[in-house]
Image 1 (cartoon, rainbow, N blue to C red):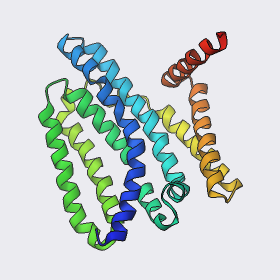
Image 2: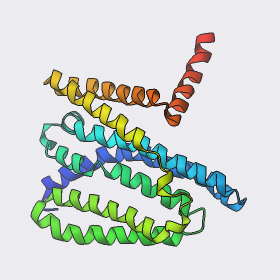
Image 3: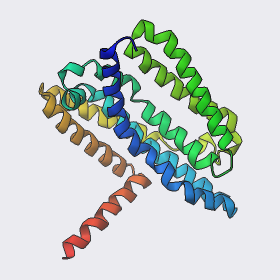
Image 4: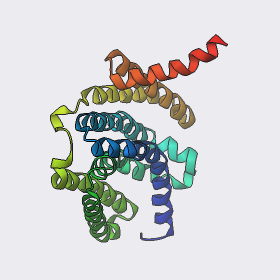
Length: 249
């Protein structure tokens, strides 16, 4: 990057993104042994169902997460990094979509390609994304500084997902039409409206960060429950199972 200040700003934004990204991408690593076992035993139908469910879960987590990071970028950077790093808020907003892009890439690459012994495709896609990122960095950073690096990262991760889909389409065990993500888009829009309303009620960054995040997450969960989303109902039942034993004591 152009100077130490630009490096600091970009690094601060990256650290915030990485914290949430770790949660989004952990699913693929956890389910890898299970998917490998299903492939080896020839249980392709269950492999398809788990893969499809994993994609839905990534979308269900990453979509509201990236939306919240875009809306809460300013108070988030101020609280976590300090006023000196406020330019990092714009970097966070531009790079937040990589939560969804990398989450989906990980599910396709680690959870689908690796069990099917197609690690070469994962390497090819990763190298392709790295080359695109490097070229874009050379072109954009001299002109846009840390924002150029943010643009490059976003485009590169999008290209990785596209390359994966084009080069390994026949190894993905489901069709795009099998995806049912409209509920998550609708619930995320409800969450965004609630958070923007919360923002209009206060000028205090701390209040907006905590109240907005809580109100937004609550609105998202309630919206999915009202739409009878399977994943949210399973999460809700899981939390109830944790509470009930305590109540009996």
